[in-house]
Image 1: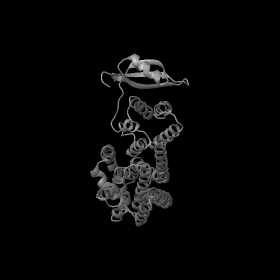
Image 2: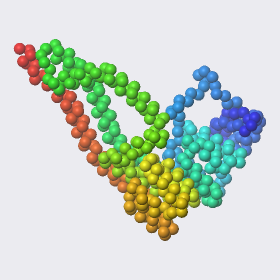
Image 3: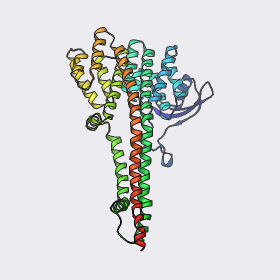
Image 4: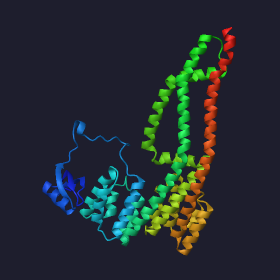
Length: 409
């Protein structure tokens, strides 16, 4: 807005709750008018500056608050319910901005509301915050606006996100225990190497004699931890920072995603997860009336796997030349025959949305069963690993004890 100034405001809504936000307006009087039109009673209005010194808000790249998928699922469901009940979009956005949880989502919804209030379409206002609203959500809302079924499009978005949250929760809960056990075992090994082994080393040196080979190896590893440990720690932090900044680049995804699919046991799981997302997202977008080529591009980007995205890119090129969807899919080795055949049947019968939903449901159940089986397999393997590593260190430490009698005499 030309000539506008950013104002930070505090207002009280009809329920008596204090609401804070920012508005761009030419004057304080304009801010008051806009707050009153939003159903808020102004309490305080100040120019929003960046602040100085300790008052300045510090933002570290990569550490900003992000909107969680679960928050988006709740937001979509609430929007669908309110719009379907006849509440205007502007009033819906005002209510959601007031009651949204988290730190970032209320701020974003306030900005979206301001843009919509100025005449911008909801999908366009959300597209201005593409780092928080996924392309799937934006394009389905755009299709709903164009077709006059925004509430149904939002319901599809909410259902899709809810299933994705459930899928992620299943994987996370299945992998929590193995990861905790692995971390605890590594901590136990480091503690023994840094604190316990040096004590035993001094005791054995006082007795004299030659230490057994396993004990000598353990002592060398313990001594090297003094300089290897800090190096590994710094290298780990640097790698983590590099990974956060580069994990979404095409070069990294191309190599990492191919490697993930080749992993024993886990490769099959990663493939099933990608197919489940593809089928669910594609079904939702077709049901919302998103054009096929646009849907294929967005589904590839949101699949979470570069190999699948690359395959769908070739499929889209074939569709652009006038071919069906099923035919080029049959030529892609990534997709199992069951998936391509069901899509072909759905395409011929005009019920591809239903067939894709069945594929997604099948693979969701398959992923859940696979993660449970992996958990059952990984738990005893980790326990055995922990026993071998820690037990081997204890044996190596106590081997010289058997020589103490001869050393004393």
